[in-house]
Image (cartoon, rainbow, N blue to C red):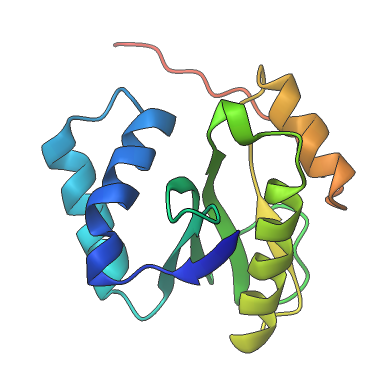
Length: 146
């Protein structure tokens, strides 16, 4: 298994994996997002391939200088998305991806790595706890039409 920064050759696989994680996006919108990440000096995409070269996961990272709950330093490296295909989960791949995220954070001069999960995604919250993250806040947003 390898975890490498996304290159032009990885774009189609990265897009396909991102749509598996975020199926509510159109392929066109997700392509614009991945292109923006690829061109941004404050963002990075990583792809995971198995020993046969098959794309099995990805991770998007960013540097945030705005408010990040629980953070004491700026910028904060932020896990914007992390995904491992179901058949490859529970094999340590996610843990290795988070180790790579921490390496990237240090390379960017960050002292902290942050992430978030939807409040109802218990499996993802459990994963984050297992790989060393501490829960710092829970939020439910409301809106009312007026």
